[in-house]
Picture 1 (cartoon, rainbow, N blue to C red):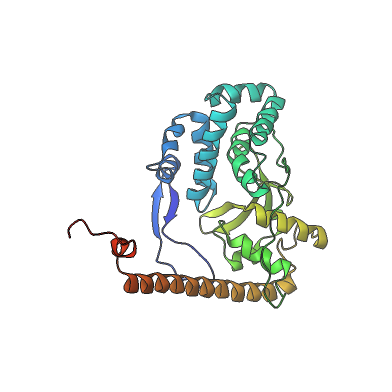
Picture 2: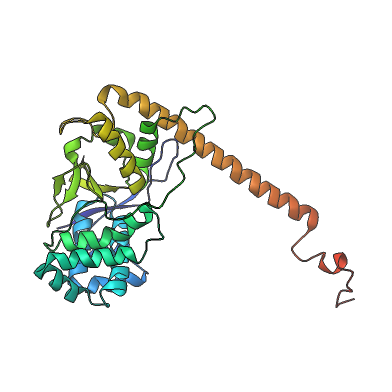
Length: 305
């Protein structure tokens, strides 16, 4: 079955991109394309890893990031806790799911110095790998948080938690504000053995499903956004048919605030970049190329003199 594979485009409010390129490829070819020129490409020769990659190719709308994330973390999982033999570890986990859970815990214990966001990325590949091969591992938070600095507020102190959630939900998901607005609670959860959605808005990692021209496609919500969403869900307590990210009557207001803040961030970063480039340029215009005044400033005679 040919899969629609899109490359060359991104999305962020107020940021224009070039047109994307559309191709129709097999799931295996999409997987290989996503890992082209990467060391982990050879891991696709392992059947259980190729299955993870092909399911992600079939189910995700923007598979590049998720295939790379899954396969690279599986590669690390294999080297650090499976002795480089994923197939043997899989057989052991299928025979006794407790073995799979113990391997996951051992993997995470090796990296307890990392933040919850980093650990969530680290365990993504192994969770998908076990799940897609019939091993029932819990899709719940399995690690201890390392304190993180909260995102900075504005000088007006008007940065609403829901606005922050909407902005974070754009990062890495490939979603737009309009798509976020349409996602309901029932469109979020974990995955089953075939990559189908199982409703659970508190799942970790959290899968979001959206309708596209090619049918339903999934993406994964980033860990920081997932944590923010969990807090909002606890406050709102929405039902299965309710919007996931904000109540319908409030969403437009939050979206407009997020769009304005997003454009402001882009303008600020652009100004900082221009200032830094100009400062460096002005310095070298006055000082000259690096090393030009070394001998003069240090009272040393130039060799050629």
